[in-house]
Length: 392
Image (cartoon, rainbow, N blue to C red):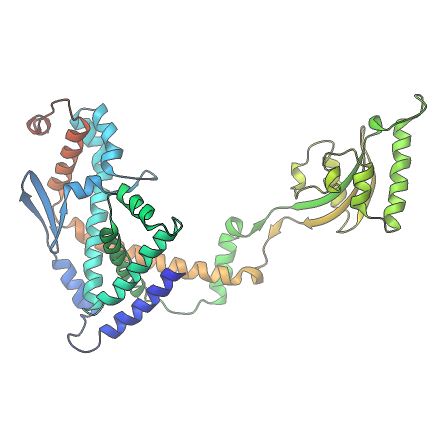
């Protein structure tokens, strides 16, 4: 919640910072400028770098920075290194190029998005960003019990320090603000939209499974003590069950009776079972699901006679299969609609940014990053740059 509070405060600072002095560019001007932004491939010592609107992107930054790859938060070097070790360069390149292109394109688009955000926000934003990012640094420290040394050590393991963490947070906060500002749909959510969305998502989010919870006195005739070995234990069990039912009807506590007379596994807990789905009850307890359909809490059913058991059941809770009523989840449905609207706006914005990034020639930079990963992955195998490029 603190993050969103600081984001809200920051938005106010940004709005205030745009008054007076240089007027902010219009959306149309921003779009025209974005299209003309250059992404240049520049030769540098040992290879290439990308210059993206004045910011330098190196091969090391790409291959050593952790990102999400195949569901893992890992650096491309760690992820692709074993693949490089196990394949010739051309096979490695074929397997890795598509994913590495995505990593590079995401990095480029993030830089362009940040530059857009800076231009739209104007120049009077640094103080608000600094406060919000410092707060995120303090919150990160709280994850380690407030031990900032431990927190800094965790950052170090991710090739970061306090300064780089704060800079990363400042960029993330500003980009989030910019994305929020690009969600123009402020129209109210209609009742029809709410109902359509509820019907569409209720199976995923609001389905209720059938569930019962009960107390059980489980009389097992084979475990009853008798003085006469010829005595009918089954009949004795029925008689005991009927006497217990009379005591229950007269107001005796069901749980205490279960502790005294039940042979079931839950007798020490007053015969109280955990909530279960009726369909999950295996024989001989499946008969309890049938009886539970006939009564409502806190009614008692019994005696329920099976081959080896005589049950007395008190129904504590009963929930039928179905859905959470729309009236109970209306606020959640509305929130889902608003989130979907915002996601659609963000997806369009990201697609636009990536489209601009792809207008530039980045193939050589991708290949250069692949060469570095392959060389490092095969370190010690005397793989030269000429040998790598010779296979192309």
